[in-house]
Image (cartoon, rainbow, N blue to C red):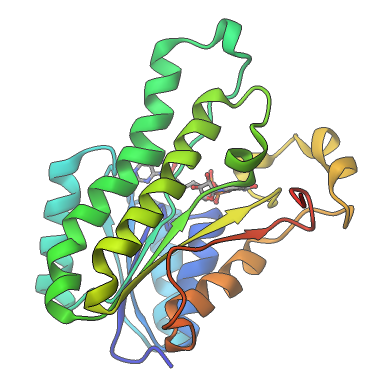
Length: 244
Ligand code: NAP
């Protein structure tokens, strides 16, 4: 379904990003993994993707909070693969604490990665998508932006910004046949949420955490031609956590 298409996944080395890389590869897409570091994990992921799915996979070291690094990464990917059709803005961090003790540096770090990172990479791909007159942008938001989770002033604000960026991007690129949608996961079992189960599981109507693969399946739909008329939406995947 995605043969001949290239997917750029930021923060693709582990967690939800890695699951998205594998799912899109299983549908035939070549994969560009943008990661903070190249390490054993990214090497193993590249190997698994190429061997198991017969598509290309390569890691590009890129800190998404650095606008120039994003532009250079996109240049390199275009030189290597010839196209970028799918952009998944997945890189993200948390630095949770009550606002009372939250340092400005912790606020900035989360905004710089989660919100500015999404802006930088979208901007870096913008012209390519316009010229191609086709593209799929998938932004990782969070139910935290919808609920205003206590202890996450920086994170919730960054993800609310991601939702706003999603809508702006969708409107700006709609006439070019480029869609942009946001996924708002609830509690997904990854390194990010390790040790926080007791705090959240009780509040989830389905009484269990989601898997990275659950999010990857939704990302695959948003990356595929089956969702070509869907743009500017925010889709929750949370076992009911943020039902309103
Ligand atoms: P994770 O396991 O902590 O993985 C985060 C990934 O982002 C890692 O690969 C990390 O790279 C990368 N990253 C962090 N800062 C980066 C930067 N400046 N530049 C490039 N890459 C960077 O997190 P996850 O749970 O998979 O989360 C993925 C996305 O889903 C995030 O945007 C997160 O906010 C969102 N989300 C997650 C949940 C959840 O319950 N897990 C819920 C809602 C939303 P390294 O490996 O090099 O550190």
